Length: 331
Image 1 (tube, helix red, strand yellow):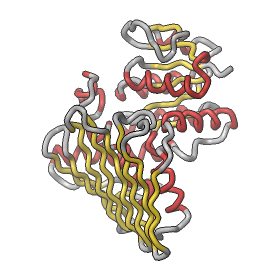
Image 2 (cartoon, rainbow, N blue to C red):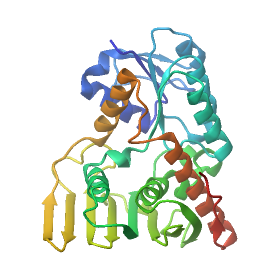
Image 3 (cartoon, rainbow, N blue to C red):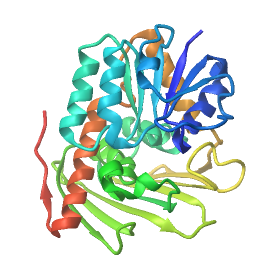
């Protein structure tokens, strides 16, 4: 039986635990580790709740750690876990600095363990289908892309400390920066403007191909409003639109909300209401397959997580300076 430790007992730690359990691995969650003592952990009732990470990493029975802690702690925990011989599912963003991100990547490369950064948006059915359609050439080369992500203000106090979370463009916008890079290629410059620290924030990314990506990020929609995300791609041979909304960003969104996909080409327009799937379960199932087969998680590679972080950090810098920020090109 696969044995798992959840590192972090907050909202995302509970989300990971629930997904592991839904996939039939609840009994395998051996530990929940939190720096502060927590009471009952309903999503993993059989787990031992501890405050000492060393206890978890020293246990040879632990195969996998799901790291769901504030981003500022990612380098220390991920590197220690990889060095201890654990497979690592690491919540996004990969880190708060490029140096820390590259250190995590290097630790994974020097180990024989699997590291995957949990860019869960890649596992939403609409984003997955968009990737499939673009890769198949159905809309031709992508010339322009727009994305938006609208959430209510998070409850976690640490999230409002940029030294722990990176701020809105790093913690929230990074999902869409990752998508822009996926569809448009190598980013060259980043320009961001904001109405308020929680947004709306508008970010424009120019790409080496000549394509332009635009991202709207807002973490201050009214309480009770749905979590909303969308992707719009304009290609040389067609257009593609995906809209998703639900009561919460985690899970499948239940039976309410929006999960609409549209592909328009010279052959006509096809509009589809997509089936509901739990994207966190899809993500963990994929990760577990890569652990078992020993192959790299190419659907969500570490290099892409690092590149998305670079764009996010440039967006944050642009918000401070009011200037366009150039990016260093990487091979």
